[in-house]
Length: 261
Image 1 (cartoon, helix red, strand yellow):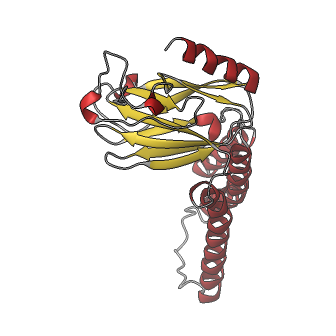
Image 2 (tube, helix red, strand yellow):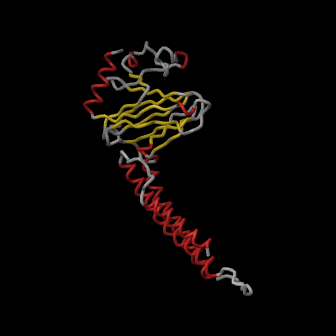
Image 3 (cartoon, one colour):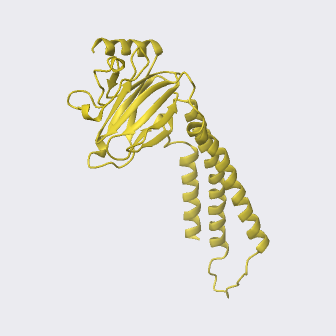
């Protein structure tokens, strides 16, 4: 009896914590984040109800069929019930998978809007670098031989290329609110991962690959960008910030950066 009571109490406590959202994600800052949370909550409700019923049924079985000093009885099961709950489980699993896949596919399969702002992202042990095109809208030519972290040229921009003279590099990423962004993710050494909790997005950066990664942030503020792939001894230090600004503030920042070149 005591074991059944413990199971019921723990079940109620766990459901209370999760469904009450007392320990939860930070608020989303994009439409994708809202869709992600809605799908997560739907999945949590479905699995939570099943968890609640299963644990209470377990407690009931323990309480009802506890040892009372009588001979044990055996059952060979019920094929119809087994087929029923197996089919129901499969339908629930496939249904949740299909609805969740739409959200994932919208990020990875739908092409970015034509007016998306392109930002190059370079990861290396253990820092981030970001590159913006200047007023001409073109990125300058790069050369691996010209890479100089100490000299402020982590991308290896060729200063002999006119298109690269107005390129802007930054150690943090700044974007205008409501503007579609297309990141071009690159890694110089090992696999890293670009992760922003509030966007509900994360993507590996693989050496030798240029990976497109679109998003749109709608709420202004400053948010942490963390590398969420173990990349070496300094992995814990590999973090920067995403600053979502008003369009006016973003344009002002770009002008200030251009004036310093």
